[in-house]
Amino acid sequence: QVQLVESGGGSVQAGGSLRLSCAASGYIYSDDTSACMGWFRQAPGKTREGVAAIMSDTGSTYYSDSVKGRFTISQDNDKKTMYLQMNSLKPEDTGMYYCAADDRLPCWARGTIRIDNTWGQGTQVTVSS
Image 1 (cartoon, rainbow, N blue to C red):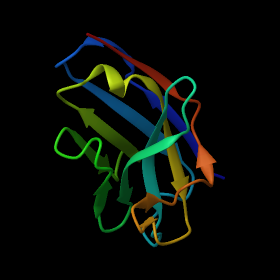
Image 2 (image 1 turned 120 degrees about the vertical axis):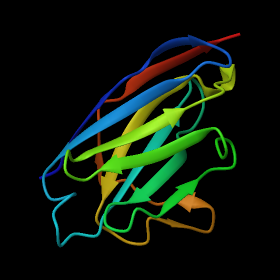
Image 3 (image 1 turned 45 degrees about the horizontal axis):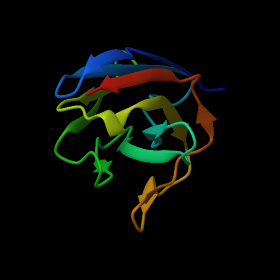
Image 4 (image 1 turned 90 degrees about the vertical axis):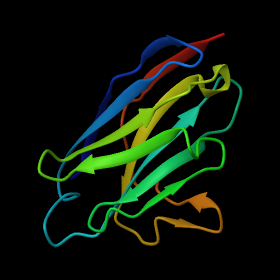
């Protein structure tokens, strides 16, 4: 069973930076496992959006167009933790950020991040103008 716990959210002014962490337990970062880890966000009144994903074994990454060049997804397999470094934050980046995991491949296809097996509880990010 996989469990995910996010941390690192907060409030920041536009142009600022935040780093989110997602601590995972379970099989995700096992030596013989190829799995998907990703970050999603949801603003009030909007649908959930996948923003970044990473493969647990190869480290291959994918970003949505809305965050490409500003956000960086990474992981520390020994610590079983995934990160999202968010720079040049904009008010439209405001929302609840969730990490997610899935053992079904591919992790992304046709411009969509396909990760929805296990979810964390979320961490709030607020960017003020």
